[in-house]
Image (spheres, rainbow, N blue to C red):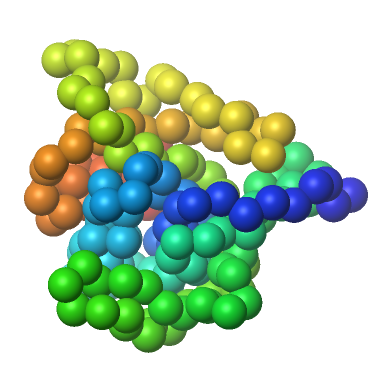
Amino acid sequence: MVGEASFVHATALVIGETGLLIRGVSGAGKSALALALLALAEERFYFARLIGDDRIHVETYGNRVILRPHVAIAGQIERRGRGILTLPFLDAAVARCVVSIEDHALSRLPDRLEEETILAGIPLPLLRLEPGLPPHERAAGLWSDFRRMGFL
């Protein structure tokens, strides 16, 4: 059964079979993080593709959240200071995790692998990132988290 659909301001990609939704305020580094994760996946010989940048269509199908690109900008991602890039993309993926780039510092010892968020009425694991870290450092840290969570 298909549930209600909406668009969210976020970036989405898939690594292996894991659909990821990256959210944060404008300018937080969502696109840069997605590009860093795509590069890291390629470097480590994992399948990875952009789903979409800026506007992500989110809908439920049964007990799963489906991520899709906005049709007008599918395959496009902004690289700040360089303009719009066109990349290979997937039309859809099942969301397995939400990454949130926070606009404030996090506690020193958060239990990063135990948080959840609700997306389109479905609970999903939530990984919070502090602001200001370089994208490649964020990507490397997330890669370790994804492995511990069984996504890679």
